[in-house]
Amino acid sequence: QSALTQPASVSGSPGQSITISCTGTSSDVGSYDLVSWYQQHPGKAPKLMIFEVNKRPSGVSNRFSGSKSGNTASLTISGLQAEDEADYYCCSYGGSSTPVVFGGGTKLTVL
Amino acid sequence: QITLKESGPTLVKPTQTLTLTCTFSGFSLSTTEVGVGWIRQPPGKALEFLALIYWDDDKRYSPSLRSRLTITKDTSKNQVVLTMTNMDPVDTATYFCAHTLFSEDKFDPWGQGTLVTVSS
Image (tube, one colour):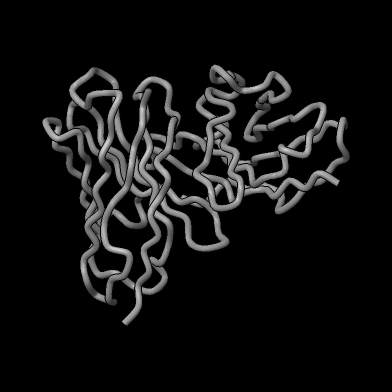
């Protein structure tokens, strides 16, 4: 099972909005509403930001939102803040034989 | 509050078997739908799923690493153990364990991770 495809990097200025895409296949992203997104700061463990495509865990800012269309999921961060600068990974259920598949990660730079 | 912590050797030699332990608190692996997963991250690279185990002893593995991995649980000790055979330098990575739920397919929270270096 190949990793999900994410852009290597995105950038935005404080206050702006950015969107990170995550492209899979009809066997994973396209078949299940089980896409999650993780934020990882350097040297730290990943933190869950979005699950089941568009649900936010308690404590996660409503500036973070998720969506999906076909085989592509997206994470949108609005009102960019310096603290949002981090790596972001998408993840999807891929069926019983491939229960978890991660994206290659996207480095977000806040200019 | 759920916490997890990984432990094991920091250095292993090529061809050796790696054994990592995830010790957790704040939940029980005897509770319906609860699971623990292992994920690794080579230095500067992306996350990679390894294995997970659920409350009912259902086990799932990465297809590409399945032949080298074994995941087990000790409910009484609140521990999950991952073994990986025939270690190679490319297996050098930070290894994380994380809490998951069968119905929600998410990893939350994660342990701090432990760096394992494979070198002779």
